[in-house]
Length: 253
Ligand SMILES: [Zn+2]
Image (cartoon, rainbow, N blue to C red; front, side, top):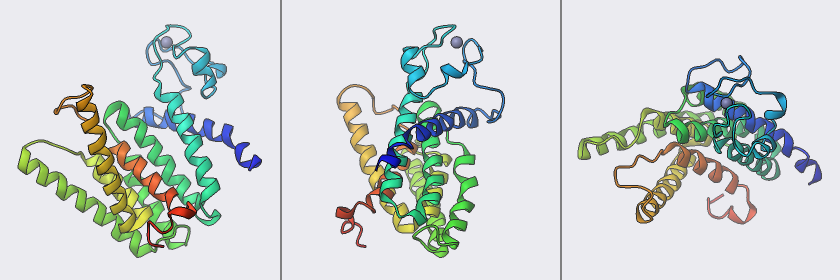
């Protein structure tokens, strides 16, 4: 157990990198260069202003030079990454850890970019689908290659159909292409059943959160709530729950 906790700083740093990916990919910036800068005063960040969580706390969530607030999403994503990856190591059989590590990293990037900009980078969805297929082919995922392929296609087409029916009936766009591509990625790693459970879990959580926000006056019926983070969280929860011994029955193993 101790050696698992020793990895927490590594996961926090990984979360910090995922923050950079999330910020730069949807803005179509180079992910390797230049070094991180404050987006408001353009001041290059020093190494000690880049330490996960600690720097944000010491600077009280503001830039050192221009004092502009720094998004609270930075520490939240770092902590979320550390929690998710720690559970991944504890619960999931070693054989499947590498594939899920790739999936979870892509999902965490998606959570951040969708909350912040309502955009999901295809580099974190469509471009990673082949990795899911390769992993299932080599037995690095508990689904067959056939399940991966059908999962991906079923997920995309199902959500696409629902969104277009919704558009046709109400004249409003409830979901975007990014959501279909995200569920296609989830289907490639979790198969048809996994994509289906993810969608059910995400829709339930989404309705619950939406209704709560309206009831408590934080949103109106026309407020747009990004669906990507719900799908991403649901996929992570579904994957991890399968390996909690007491939940094995729930998913009919
Ligand atoms: Zn600044």
